[in-house]
Length: 276
Image 1 (cartoon, rainbow, N blue to C red):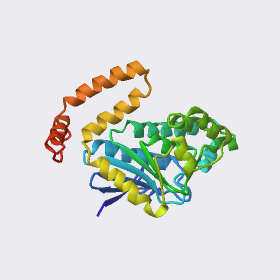
Image 2 (cartoon, rainbow, N blue to C red):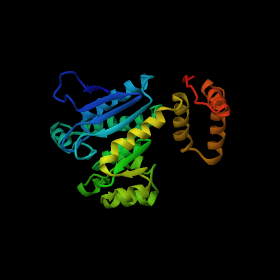
Image 3 (tube, rainbow, N blue to C red):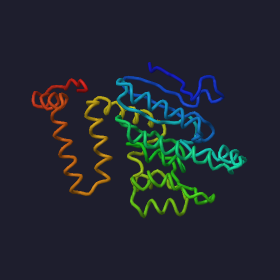
Image 4 (cartoon, one colour):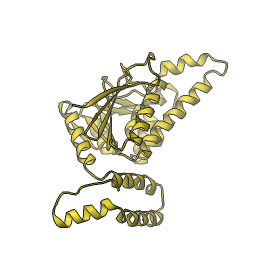
């Protein structure tokens, strides 16, 4: 059985249960629970950041899954929360700045986490919710899921979601989503490169757990090295990327898990990872 823990930004707050964490055999499942649309409120984002920071420090956690308990994966920022904070003398500027910077920190924390993060999507993922999907390393969705960056429809261009989106899909496809604000279906999202797999709703968790289990069985040190190198080289020129990754592979060859893995392959046995 998995250990279940409710994570909240402050103990005893009105936001109890916003995020539920389940830990089982190296896999940490974070389930957003902010119905009806899992809006990324300040409280939910703070809870997610706290959980990810704990996961970073916990050697027992090998893989993180981000899922949802509501009908939507996430509809993005909490527009009602943003609107309520327009009443200040600054018209809400300070709160808006806090919200966008916190969201940017959350997305960058996912990318920088030295452990793979899988998005499990059932329902809509729009605006910052779509940004959350694009920020994860892998994304698996149901065949009834939908994705959009609809800010343009309400006078608020999805500029921060654009950062993650444009790093996942081709530019013209990203611009299509950003300029029209229209929802794309799961098949189109896979064609665009936003998701890896589409599965029937009844098999979603089973498939995601299988992916997580396979990845959790790899060397945690090698996963850390590989994930960091993947995102760093993606921003480099071709020659710089090869120069950098060649150095990474040399350093990787020097770690104990590489020696063990190669030896196990030669000896036709299962490797025993030490994370060293």
